[in-house]
Length: 269
Length: 161
Image (cartoon, rainbow over all chains, first blue to last red; front, side, top):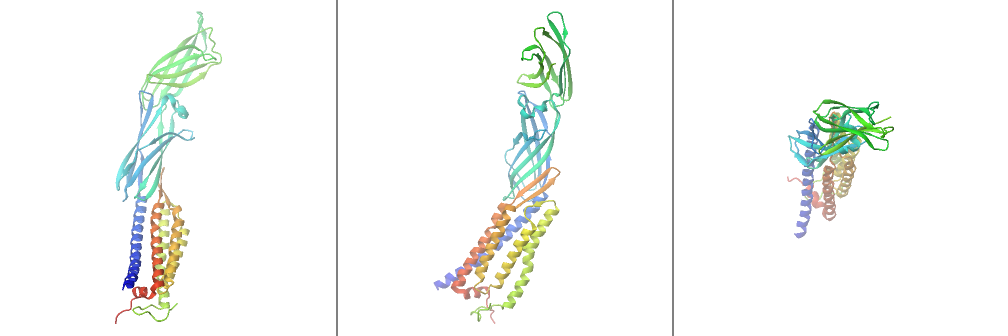
């Protein structure tokens, strides 16, 4: 009798395993079909418009949002967004922003805020952006888990329009004119356009320097440029006759209470 | 293939009947294991989705599993049923093992948007199927070694007249 029960339990176990296998197979197949269908209907909506601001410490912030719509039947979990703004010459990532993890529910929408910060006084490889307008490539990478089991990476490429705060900056020194009082006057002109979406307020300091780096003469130009405005300034600097400008340069920098930004120098003949 | 008279309480189908029915089972199996996966891959390709798995892979895997399932069906009234089941479990395991590294799709979702899905975790979850098949085949082999007639009475019960 005991032997018979053992044999019966073995046959019962075989039957139970067969049924269990079919149930699991059907459940997984249904899940795969639904998840695959939902994945095909997914419609990311790209990024919203970017907002720029210049903070008092010289930091420019770029705020943008990544819009996502999930018409599918499964939620996105552990969703984090890493965005990179690429250098204009395409040599690599310049700025990077990573969002906290969020959940995008099934048949829901989500806006992922992205914030980039850059310090004007230390732009590094992006220094050209002080004086050049650019269309910057932005790459957004979404990492997360879809439908509990499916890992995913969503890559969205967008463009950011960057307006340079000192667009086409020109500093030029004219021909020296002897003044007869132990100095000679040098006419200096500055011109640039503020193509940025933020205002620029401070002082442009220009200095005529000898080949050895000694400052022969300098001047300050107060600047209060609203967005999308142009600036043209001219002044005559008086240089002592003993201070030779041969091989020197006209150096310029923008100064605000919290920061200093070097501007492109011009070599003197 | 016949093993003498039917054991008491069991009515075994003839070899010819098993072969005929086994061949009929081939068609739904081919649809399930080859046709549907190939159609899904074709649908994804038509939607612009790049799948990591090829139609060739699912065709070869599906054909192998279909052949082994048919052989197992034909061998069901015999002691070879368990060992053939072990072979089928091994083939299913190998099939999933080959599928796992290619379990990804690339979905273009806009002009500058792509979505890469990695469902290798789902394939790993599917490994429970060959595991169950393997355990079942081991139990069947043990059962048949101990008492084949007992299983045959359950799988092929004689009809009462």
